[in-house]
Image 1 (tube, helix red, strand yellow):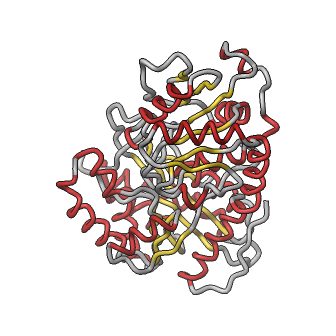
Image 2 (cartoon, rainbow, N blue to C red):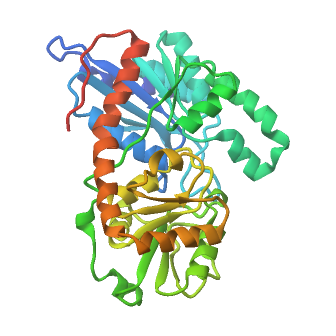
Length: 401
């Protein structure tokens, strides 16, 4: 019995040696090995998984880059550069797993021997990456995807905020570079004393979210008149999405406006002009619904980026959102309208104003804006510039789809 643990470790080590041999000889080409590590990856994940999947696909097309992605799983597995590291499932966690032991993650990083590590969450995996840095002597970048102090404040009150802010300051102060998805998040990090912060916006899949997917028969399928003005919101029905504001807005608007709520944990007891799809929908289904709606509405006032806004814009529909969080940076005047936060009446007025104008033209402009500024290829090229900066490399890394 005493030899089982060492034997298991030896087998795992051989496993990684075997899979790493694939890149040992590529005609003398210099390969930069980038490893992403995060616990924010599950079947029903949101923006972080979208970012990592898009990044993994595009870096896989680059002959000078090898990309490994470390995520939680039931067992140690590897497939197409994605490594699942054992971690227990969270009860009622929608498929999420929460790592409890640092060593398995650190050991995988040690065996992979990456040139650079990017951290995608502020929990144990972040400390595993910093621990691996001491062994490997490689730079570590922290991507600040979520506003942890605000998240804790929403769930537990302001009592813990100073302690959480101190934790964020200590953790992210250790990284060689910190990336934030919006200027508002970069400013928050700088206010905590973190100096080496850079804005790196996310992107949208312009092929997946596309006006061509519009389904003319959707309104008939929903049982509403063809001349209805169909509004949509897609995402998890969490507290910070402020769905009661959306319901107040649509109740005030009345017919011919109709709201479609798509995602898990949606509210019950909604007004008559609301349809709820209360479960996680695959991306292609969300894309079809988005392209088939007339506008997206979003009442969240705490978004660090707001990927669903970009998905709507790429789908060719305008946006009505609140003037808070990152939305001030994303929603340009020719793409939609912004309203005061936490005010259903103000949002209803902006929705009415949108349809009094030319929503089709706004939708076309929104699509053009997404094409010009948020294509994943340009986003990944921006990431490669950050990697070059911390690696001190003059490698001509550039991604073309």
